[in-house]
Length: 117
Image 1 (tube, rainbow, N blue to C red):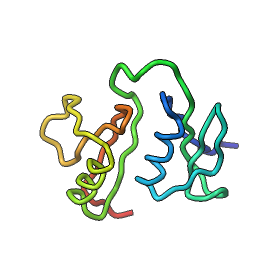
Image 2: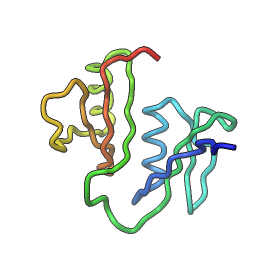
Image 3: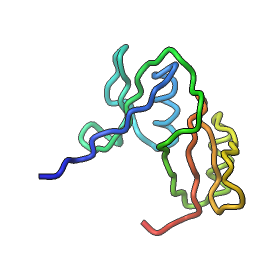
Image 4: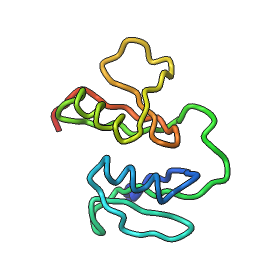
């Protein structure tokens, strides 16, 4: 029997704040919150979700795993995310069709050109 993907864990200085930011980005909701973790998902029965856990240190190097977003309108989504506190990030990507942004704690993610789902 194969495993099922349940969640992706994100280290955070302020798990509650970062979880709520990502919930707004993804149109998710907080489905569980405790001092040790904050979980967001589409709803309480739909996974995978994201779990934000507290860590004492700030992010120091490029993420080895990141989220790719697939918006209907890349330019509009990049503008919306920057308005929410994301920032453009140069990780050496060069000339590419996607936009690399960092969330409020610096975790990189990509905003792709629209792709069929």
